[in-house]
Length: 152
Image (cartoon, rainbow, N blue to C red; front, side, top):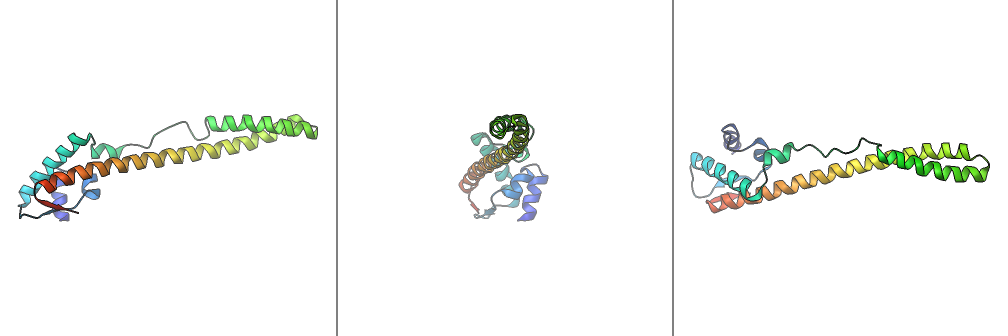
């Protein structure tokens, strides 16, 4: 079976991403290897056009890029920290020192928030990519089952 998948990938009928993550196809009605390759190519095209999902683009899609780590989050954190520090410093008698200390702490909190936001964006992109591949694979499997193959 691995040889058959490799042959399809080399022949250009299936992209490598589908071959490694896609459904396993078994010719349940004695179809020849040539017929299976033809059917897989046709079902790949059908699934791609009916779902609007191109597995070569889904797997190659880069993670979303946003502001650099610490962009707006650090500035906002520094401003909030400075304001809070100034209030605390004013109570203690040195608002400037309190603001400086607060700004440093706020910058650190803002940077942590930026890193968390970036991790969340990457996780969301990965989940969307996996969902798209699941949709494509279901369509591909339905087509192949309709042509008399067993899919796992």
